[in-house]
Image (cartoon, rainbow over the protein chains, first blue to last red):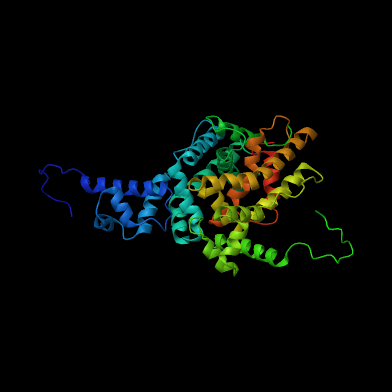
Length: 205
Length: 205
């Protein structure tokens, strides 16, 4: 399997030209999605044209549009960074800043639309996206909450699935509300305000 | 303006046939949207065919597709019922049950998709929908929260815009999470669990 000719100079790892092409193809797909193209409208032709490559270059790497789109979506929805800060409060704020950054980014938003809202039309696409990109995030969040329950920073009888929905759901709804002309503004301390009000509760002290 | 011929038998109010046609047209539009048709795909032709009326019947009442769609969306997203129950807690639960019912209804969901997610493509449509259907709801919610602050059921220093996002955002995110295979289940007490955990907070007692 390995060559015995150890004196041969090392060849550059990977294949630069095809790696460049792959990045250009992924970028082209995300650009088109970010411009509002639906999954149905997206075509290998359009992606190839935008990326400046031939269709065969795409088909050499992906056997169909769905595989390519899943790779593109997953690339954008990177796994969460390691969240083990000073406290669960810090971790929750860091997590909500990531949700905020994604939600304010037009490309990310269109990607979520395709993955989540086109789900009724493309259930298999939505399911693959869920497994590749959303599940790892959910698992990291749940682990963070359970850590807080163990340290006593969070109530021991926490309803974890509801708490997870509170965190991301509040941020997403807040941003959407502000953007559609509601009260409030999106700023650097939005994540902090959400986390502090979630920890303290809406009830009187 | 009024007739003086008071002995004449009362004619049926409204014009039954055109009222029936109008309802059928609105229903047809909502059906097509509910089947996943985007605003761009929706056509007066398709609506007329589904409703079993001629295109002129539609144009007699609505001058364009946007006006018809706004009427249809607004009809589905009815204003909130009067929420002045025993307590703010009861009102919040009643409100979240409405959010839940809407979110679990495929037709409502597609309507929200059109109104909110097609916003980037159809900003005027989204803006009109916001004013006709969403603003009255937001105002009712804000009034309910301020009532709770006044009675002492909610903390006096409540961050109202964030609290509003917590309520609907949590319910929407929770339902979406469960439906896409996450933990938890949607049941009659989901609204109650969300409200109670929001009131109590995630922090330790």
